[in-house]
Length: 475
Image (cartoon, rainbow, N blue to C red; front, side, top):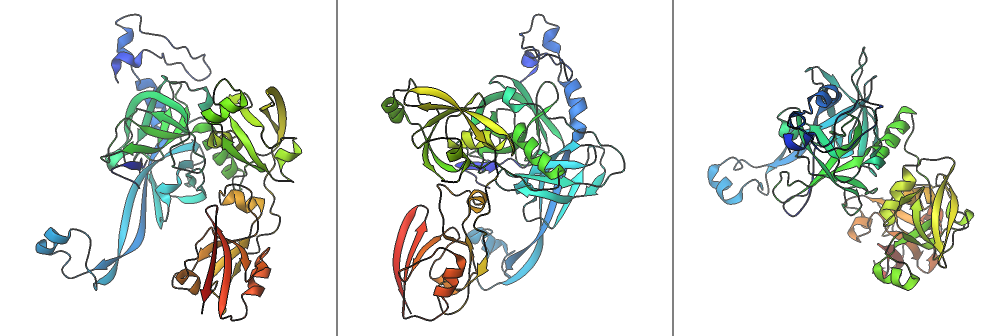
């Protein structure tokens, strides 16, 4: 959780504008109108809330944490000077850490969607319904890339649930309601408007593409519902921007079209499969747009291509500018990745491509990234600076899984044991090993063979965050 000057997770005005969007039941045409009479100013959100609220649940999690304890910790004198920082040399003790969030029932059999950070590290998850019944929940799936998790509770009867709305149909100014459990006070409903759509610079998840709303969202709302005036789920409340810890009217929700994909994958019994583009992308800046003769900055430039990837198969070329995905404009690589991800795997998608000032349509096959070569994960030991590191072969599938940029290949460090030789020489997860003592490392098998025997010096070439690091380690 970030506070003061950054983002804070959002754990899970007014009667006068209530009539600006008359409520219609599911299936009826949505009409945006202004109030025409005093009677219309007295319209209420109550019918929508009455139908939707029972499908929004409270989520209570607990986990055991270890905390350093000192006999002076509770002394008021030391508290005055040191606060809650604790004291060196104290004993460690275990304590239960509790947290609260919200969730939404999306299937009458007991399937619930929430944010992954709400249940992260939890030893126990309890779900409380609006009728005060509580159930133990199991995690069906958790997708860190989208910060979404799917839970299941065992029930004997059908539960109230929310139907998905089309988040792509939202417009700035549409009225929305946020339902959740802020600060643990109990289920709360707030109203607001869609302040912006397609926010991609939020930095909350790898698939950054959010609905922004001024409906009050506070800690405890994470995983709660953002619904439209048809009572349909259009987003999962995920984060807020705050300097005080409370709501400042800038909240963000994960669009329902992404939520639908994750829920569908869980219902099918598998993980989330996303289409592989097979290339690197770059945002079109104003300077680049001028150089290309574009009227305005729009789209993404194909900066690199994987020889066997779908982009190359579709005939895309380096320098092409992709402006739309199935008719939806894309402003940057995050927007493009979102549009591609929500299409799922299978079939094709139409890309509007600008090449040499000519606009054309390219059909991109929607295929998953291949696991080639196999990752062949190995835990290294022996007399080398890599002892204590876990490494894997980079494949397109692993590159997608780790959300790496570009088209890297070779061997990547995926974990480092604390206190190991690898930790002491500052090897880090994400490091890509290119050379050891002048030998090109193209597989985990080759790296293991090159680090099996002791040496007086180790010459390493490693890539970290796009930078090449050459170093010599002496024993």
